[in-house]
Image (cartoon, rainbow, N blue to C red; front, side, top):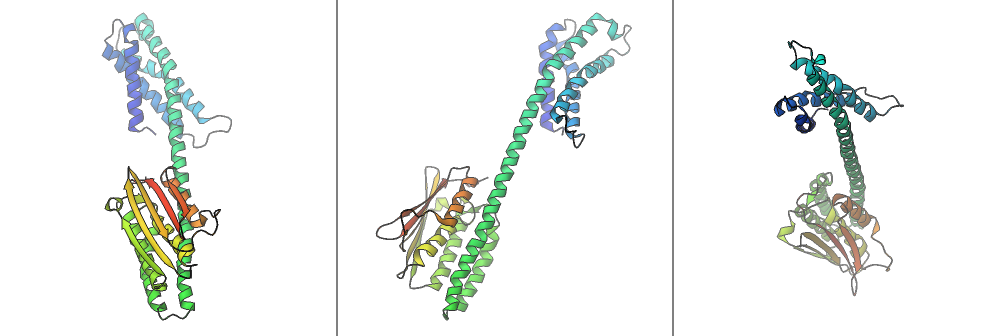
Amino acid sequence: MLGPRRVLLALGVSILLGLIISPGFTTTPTLEVVARELPVGLAALLAYGFFEQWPARMPPWIARWVVQVGAVCFVIPFAVLAVYAAITYGDAVPFWKNPLRVNGIFTMTITGLLFAPWVAVAALFHQREVERGELERKALDSRLRLLQAQVEPHFLFNTLANVRELVDSGSPQATRVLDTLITYLRGVVPRLQEQTATLEQEVQMVRAYLELMHMRMPDRLQFGFDVEAAALALRCPPTTLLTLVENAVRHGIDPSEQGGRIDVQVRVRNGRCHAEVSDTGVGLKRAADGLGTGLATLRERLQLAFDGDAKVDLVALSPRGARAELDFPARQDTQ
């Protein structure tokens, strides 16, 4: 396709070639030599762009780039002849009988054949790099959407399982908790479909989730927040903080007979966001415990969103409990 950038490139190369060969045209002004090169450059661009689109499918025995470069070389001599036919129309002596005209045709044709194929090849390489970058971006976006799709049922099923325990126990709080859950999910589920979220939205979701869990186990769960105002506008994948908190409830507070406390802390330091979710639950069962499915998926989502510049760690606390640590660039846009 003949976009503005390609047209400007063709014109720029034509002007440069005109300036380079103009000293050899002793009887012709430099601007006129440059003007002669412009239609030749545009003709080469048209040939390049035409065979970029046609035919829709090339025969298997020849590559499209070969045809494009060949077309550029093929069209240059005819474009030069057309230029000279136009500028010498009405002359008493035909241009092919004028030694100066013949020398000009030869000079423009040779320089065009020397430079134009290399310009075409460079453009092809640039185009391939752009296409490769676009494919890589689409692949990363697809991978991120796949991971997001894995997070959604994981989160929803875990939340529903927690509420089911309350219903099965015959607690009088069951109806109230279910009503709260419905209200909560109505606000949260649409955000799960978004590519990014702000930390302010994350804190709101986490607070609603912890209030819901507190209704389920009022005597076994306490929580607190310490979030810097500077962090609220920063962006991250949806459910980033929620995944850390849900992990603390499921693996720290739930298995503990005494319950425990969850503290959420978010800080911005030296251009990076550092978040911690600590709990005083049962802690890590063994030193070899990994991140688990939820945190491992979160780490991969963060790696994709921040081009590998993000970390998720899980450490044991003393005398009991665990702390999930998250570190990523402090950006207001992750794209």
